[in-house]
Length: 223
Image 1 (tube, rainbow, N blue to C red):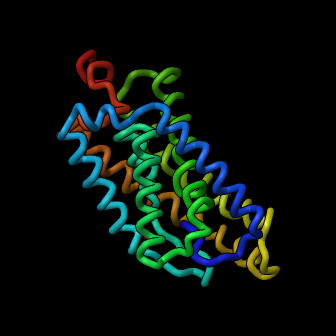
Image 2: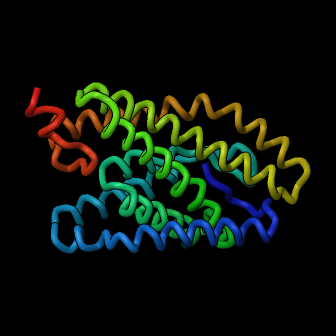
């Protein structure tokens, strides 16, 4: 889900842009390009995944004029590449939406916040919980880290969108529409969780080394 028309107050657009810029700066401070420069295969996978997500974002439902519903794939990207590279992918996809004329440019910051920063933070926290607190079991990683984590990330992103509307909607009727949109979240959550879990299951079977958050020695070799 993402905003497609200006229904937020200017101060909130600037605030969203500032928060997004801060997190993008934090991601860049981790120097994720080093891994890309050292691994040409990773370059190809990351670029291919970014382009695929951009294409899949074209499959969107226009619930209302100012809001579009679509799968984000942020949780999937975060699990495969970790948060810094995943966030850069989402920034690139949102920039592509602006350049294609699908989204107005002042919305870039809040869209990166809703579709990138918030779900990436949530799935990263869930992964940390799985990695540090839960048993080293493949099914735990899949069901808790992938299925549950991506569903929770989708819920958080939807809640962030509704929260932004509650803070600074310029159209009185838009807040009512936002609450109506919130009813679609139970439909988006299992869809995002199923696709993320399914694709992660395939990767863990055939290419576990492609998944940066997965330690095949802990979850497979020691069993």
